[in-house]
Length: 605
Image (tube, rainbow, N blue to C red; front, side, top):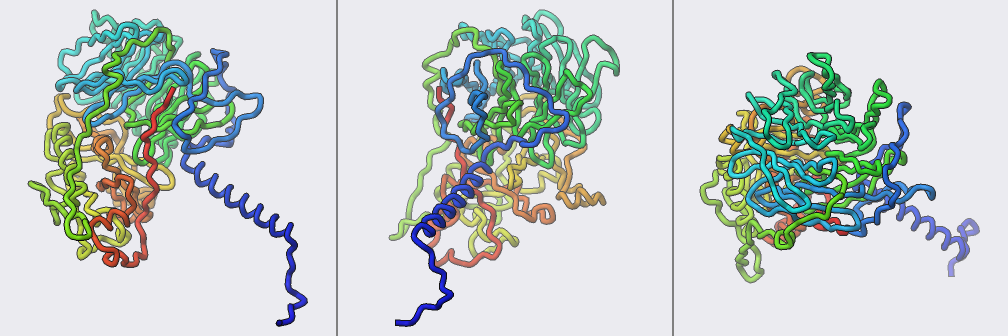
């Protein structure tokens, strides 16, 4: 036996146990950080202008919602603070479901997500009245827009007159519940109007001019209306004082250097105004304190579409790569509630009092939507692999898709043609790409090879028939695609509310735009548009993240590509078409492909 070196380190048994314990703790911390990275981020550092949290208006502690399983973590509250939950009361959401947006109700701890509508119409931007008895929302039925009022006590619906059927939306109640401020598309522009809820008087126009004004939010005190305006360039938050006239009536609250803004919302006591502001592509919740109007707004955390609860917490939508979820923030603790995934894209939501017993149809509540398409595969050969199927009437370099995706593509093509009035998917930049046709660098494992993806042509973007909105879901950049409706009379689509991303700005001589891969467009394009991304996601098609070099290489942006992943990895999808030896080619630049976070669970009571 060889003699042991006198310098060999001898570790006793308790030493090995200590090492294993430390390694386990380090691995657990790494896993926890990876999970928390998927949750909405609350900003941990208070600014010098931070204000105290609003006084809670209710002392009752709502029952924490037991499901769905949280997808991320948040800071642990102190022993003196009650656990953060979603704001109590009644929440009504407009969710994209197939071809239409439907209304759903939810009350934490009392009412699971419950369907209120199931008809062939779009129901958007719901708003609960101050007394909690009436729901106002935008209704698009049979090519005409109107504002609708739903009585929660008996379920009856009244539509307010809208003579020309042009777009009206985003209603906001006056504190006495007798008036509605809303946005209307008039004279090729969005403006703010006010009308009585009874519909007996002519609407009053609050804003006019070449700028787009939208998303009104009526303050609880009654004499102030916050709204979004492009009168100084990119969309910003302005305040209209109804006691003033002319230019003195309007005042900007947000800071343009922080990015474009959307969705202002007042706290129940009127002290705070929250909105969503996109900074560097990331949507942040900003809070302005009316008690200290000269202080700049402060960032609270990530999120879209803020809504206040009666207890002073702030509910918000978190946009995920392939769906949406709800979260909540507590102003005093910089704390975010773990995600509550939703079964469809949010097209508006509201939180209000639950003062009446909600009347809803059990038959409607129990409806399960019929799938928009049914797969019909025909495995071939002894190994039972799938073949590719020609796409009839579609122009593309290789006009076919996997047998697993052709029905889904046909359903989406028909839906987009119905919604936009033209064959959006009749011409493609790419559909199926065989292994013998290499894609540009960085796309060696792109989903186009699987036959489960397609890429829209880029020519409509240059011709003004397509726009792209940037959405950063860190660490990746995603895109939301809109196409222009063939008819511009309000029968198809709705106006845009967010500035598109201008890829061509990097060639205008601006070094910042060059380094950022473009810039926000100087104005929101007029007209009526259709959200391709929302409709594609409703039918199971997922957008893909941009490649790391997209700022300097436009094909790497992948803004026009959608994939029918259905929970498969790229290797699993390829194995449906090819033998294993055909797909083992080394790829020096793998394509970013994040894990799927499917928002199938719904909030339960």
